[in-house]
Length: 459
Image (cartoon, rainbow, N blue to C red; front, side):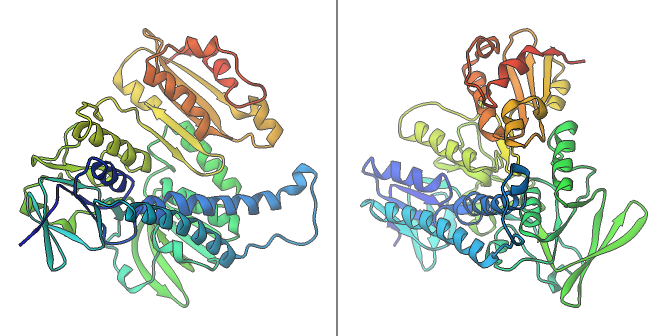
């Protein structure tokens, strides 16, 4: 016999718990199945812990640069990694406890700690028990890619999850992958005091960004001591004394690098392997992501997929937005979808990058007539006053409609400031509205009208 529920939510990332709670609030019996901690990647080994570590790393950086601001103290700056980890653990623990207590207090919601596997489109096996429901929602997320390099299985290596357990400072951290996760850890551990080398198969960091933005990211991190090895492939890995030796190939040239610790930052793989999706008939693409339509419905009626597992976004905010879309459709009778969702994300190095909409490369590829404006952060008074003038602002506008197509702000407050432009995009408001609006001085946002005043045809 199977236990009957009105709805089953598999996975408790940034969509699952909130959808389960909304469904339960409509007097539905809901099973929330999660094999590990509530909160998913974001709370446990993503946003919450990493940004807590970033804050500690910035404190170390500020202490070392105190003299630049006329502040002096005796002795070298030392980082206590055990204390750094303890602070991170406390912040994460508080978030997990709060989420667990909230979910545990919902009467019609059954939180089941187990791994789920489909038996049919409406039946799920959890351990020795089976449960069934007419509606099933998948929010199982993704995990770090682990390559099949020769020798990798014989050496200790770190991922974005396991590095959270590190309470000592690596003497030399080797990071493979120069995308967002790799770059954040590179700067973070450099600021903690480690030697850091980043190996990347491509020719620049954050290859998704435009060349000028990537160039600034490289400049910022190299200025702090990060070493990059671009156009470089890892051929094999082996132990070397108490460390790890990576054999490399750059073009026709072979080399090697030895480090005390190895961090893999090579993208993510959807957590679908244990779900037995074939038993339910749920379609996946060639990368293993669950295929959904714009309303997050899978190929099987009554089954939805939200968050990283559907390949539509790898961020906390995309997952939470998909909870809102599914709740609107399933509970509220609405028709929200991902069809018109504006891409928006941040890279949380210091200073941070805030990105919305289309990049310059994407605008050029579209062939539309557009306007472009850029401005170095050296021309932003707030940045000069703070002594943090690295980076640039960039915005693209449709030449005919005057609507904003996209923007990138790499600089002090860039992750917050760019969202002022996001609201104009969402509302379909012409950029001239911002130019005619008075802003507070001295702020970073006050330079947006000035930036827009410099718009010129994209050649």
